[in-house]
Length: 409
Image (tube, rainbow, N blue to C red):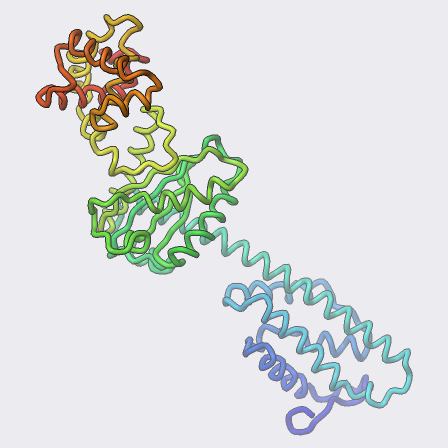
């Protein structure tokens, strides 16, 4: 029964439409309170189809499509709005009076066919409008997110405006954040799959608040709170920040396209400008690793601080390499083998046996080469007074890609 016990008048009599209002309210309750306004003129369309067999016009379906868009914009789920329409059709069918009196199966069949046609057309059109609105919302959100990320990484925007724009994305600019950059081995035709992969694993691990995933200049960018990645770490603290990088690389490496991936992670820093600082560190670490021809999957900016110092005064670094290492070019085979030996010797803590294993040569060969370094350069790798100078020069040579490339003038 409907409100007040009233039922629609006989077919064709143009009876009271109050019962449609009751049907709409009941359908709204079935759909967990979806606003009845989202039904629009859907119920009169069903009634007309049941009474006269009339099919919906294009303009009437366009109105339903607009209602689908409105539902998406209001944040109503697609399942609930479809449930509203199906429940409304079911309740209207139950209250059609001429079906109660009809004993003609053909009449019932024709009425059912007309009503189901309206339901089919309306729900399909509703879904199209909903999907179109969701696509528009996603594009708008992606654009807003991309602009926000650009301004955050640049670090020179209005603080108040950024705080307001970051709030809808759940980003608390007062927290300590770190930035990670992922570079594909080859250019990706579509970054959507990589972004979806990263979002899925990072949101699952860190939560979907205070985390942003975007693209910038062909790189995937992740901004994440440092305490969520490594609980207990202080701002700009000494513990390596590579856990986020390992998490990202582990997922990206599963993708067919883009491999091999290289991920660089900046150190965590507090506040708005800390995000820009962490980004610059990550970008510089990625650039430095490429200059060093390092194939390390995850690069921690913390581990490359010495190169930042060296590269900021390139003329002094060139002078150091020229004065200390260019004499090694007089050796048979050039400076390359001696430089490789020094690199591994310093990397393993000045242990000749370990260096020999890394170089796949005998210990005698290592000691011979170290002797040649001492004889040609005048610097003894075993002397603590000379070791620092030699090590700094070796690091500078790697950063300058010497001796493969000539030193800058």
